[in-house]
Length: 325
Image (cartoon, rainbow, N blue to C red):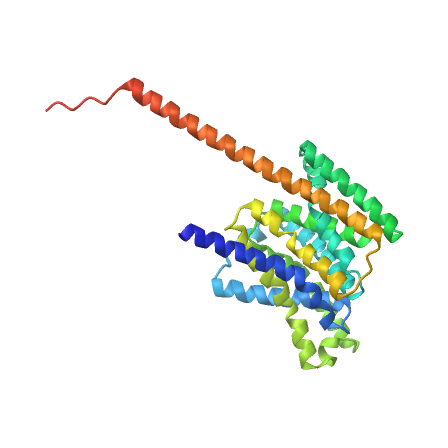
């Protein structure tokens, strides 16, 4: 029963995390007239404040000393901080400038970019279906480039920056709360410096937009940290295959908001490009489930073979002799 409750809690945490990420386009327009860079800077500053309070409450500080003594790990965290800064900044700008659908495409194609980076950078080998999925994704980008009259740069930069961020996170191998703290600490000083510079020039909306606007800017830290905490809770309770399916909730919500709420145009060629992307993701998902089933079957067969061998040895040895009194 406890295991079932843990899985249920993990599933709800995962739905909460990806659901919040999917609905976040509704939040960024509330921060206008602040520009994307000012919003990004507040997001960094207040995120660090939030996670610092969380770490203080949980008394999880011992990892900081270990991290400081590992220059290579610090370098990877700095790269992760830089790539997620690009990702966050471009995403905020996209939402507030009418490109929600194109931004959602970036997170749809992110799994395909991650696979491609695994092949190019890590020497991973793909199964045939994965090659077909990647090829379909490339065809989708070409179709969308024709539809937009240009390459979908917003989607590509978001996908590649987030894939690079994921690669760095994989190499660093830290908990969600700890890694977010380290990453925001790296960019905290530049972000705070930018906000102080805006204030000195009289261009800060934090001080001129009223208490409500200031509170919304400060809440950017919560909007950033809460989904990550929920994601961390889900990652340790549900299988990766389940998380892999849940990750599509965010771009689906974003795509729907872009069309229904923000009324962005979707001519036929864009529908065709998105259809190809969804076909590629369907192939990836089907292949992942098939590979997982095969792995489980091999593990089960190996376990049964080991049990049969143990039983055969016990039969051959015969019953243990009784001790003589």
